[in-house]
Image 1 (cartoon, rainbow, N blue to C red):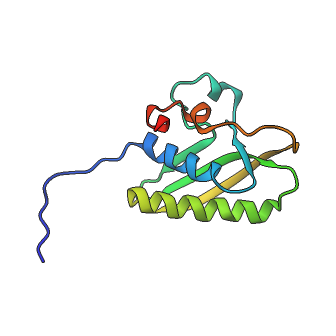
Image 2 (cartoon, one colour; image 1 turned 45 degrees about the horizontal axis):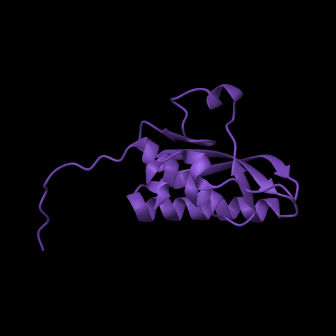
Length: 129
């Protein structure tokens, strides 16, 4: 079988941030994502809402994810579940391998606090479907 090169495929880092954020928020025990600095809330360049991706010179991608977890969860178990979900989802959807997924637990949220919806996290049009 021969492979034909038709052109180049470029995936925006913003797309990878959204995939990472959605995969993170779908893990049981995660309440929400959190920006690492207050200034990031006002910065248009930081649209990832707590997801920070960095591409190294050798082409590897590293992820730093800042989260609030729900009260009563096992923090290491949820953190490992986030790491596995992010690596698998990003590879399945974009064929990009993330070499490390660093989880930063910013806090624990009380039981009665409602969870934010995906639209408020990313403000993306495609989430309306």
